[in-house]
Length: 617
Image 1 (cartoon, rainbow, N blue to C red):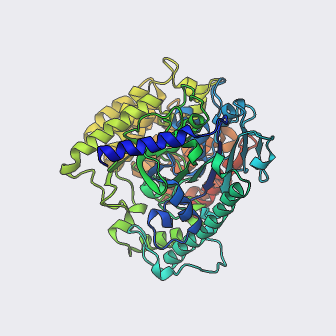
Image 2 (cartoon, helix red, strand yellow):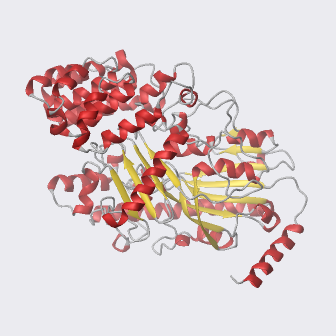
């Protein structure tokens, strides 16, 4: 744009804003949909049928680089509601539960204090206890229409139609032709896979119709000129390797923002009807942004950056993502991206990307994909999902949208790898990432404090030392074995835990060179160290180590004695031991499956793991 045109545009915007009425605050409407990425017509997907969102995008602005921060619903929504990275509050594991420090609020509470009527259609799914009343109403019938006269509203409507579970619902009457769907390079191209993808697009069309209904309600009520509207998806597609994974297919989401002319002073930079923004935006930014729209400066603990409103800040250079326990499976990966590159650090590379998650394997594509892997009929790009991970992954987002070419070991990308590696490291230190602790240890080490407070109390969480050993452990360099062996005697149990994991990750090489030290670790005061040492010895150690190792795992797998976190970790290790534990099948079958202390959906973790182990036998 030349200088003359730029000044003309600024003049017109200023003129329009000068005519804005002096009402106190705009209404804010959020419409969210579940388990879908940018597979929409307005994002250039010609296979999609999404007329309502396409029309909405023509009068709003699309964000091309929006990330959900977490690739699954509960941690993603926990990020949004708190304005904090769950890895800094200990709330990153799927459907876990902890709390915020006493003086922290969830962002709708600040809006309510400012006079907003705040509603939510039932979908909460937070991994944090609510610090008092968060919503004026949160239910299936919650609606902005129930507010007081002239009261501004903040309303959230969540649409379930595109959820993962709907992809596999049968019978289903097809709308989109499976023969015309694009199958990504990481999926096998079979009729079953095409059917699931086509049904996903059918469900997107259903979702789109419901979005249209919510948009019409605002227009028919005469509120379109006073309401700022956001549409967003809560994470990537429910197809396998989308939801739950730190690739673009799991983290990149649609985000469309509409700002009426009356409120153009609150619009993001570069806003124009039908326009696009390349700004990097994450769910971590949503709380600060909505408060900014309402004229409220976000409280200092919030970690996001407002991208519009009175308190908008400059664009950020990086987005961050995280993955920890998904369902019954423990994992730890972190991601960072800039405008071109996407970097993933896998801290548990000894686990496959496609570890068995009971809920995920109900999708026909997942089960078929795994059977083809076992049969050896996949391409290398398709097989990768069920193999153990690379410690580091680097992708050129534009050149490789399916992210099947890992550039981490290619010399010409070394500088970008080091830059993103260091930026991720600094980020983890900055937010005090408590994910370096096993899930149960997060809560045990916190005691009566919150994990957020524990991680910031002097002497309670030496993240620098723990991060350093975790990077040594997960880097898989055999030269680090002596250092890992020495760390098995460290004072901090988290350092010892990562040292034992690091030796496990190096398989026979690591265990052969540390057999005596790992045997001593079977009696470590930390049960998590004992679990890691027992799995290492049972899988890769000498025959005489098998039974003592299984004794450790079977004892800790008893949920009545040790609770769900330890039992879940021990059962994950037993599952990895596989057929070497088959002769102890009756003892595994006799393990208790539940306990009154287990809350919510965590009740299914132990039964699912025990069933999987026994089915494999």
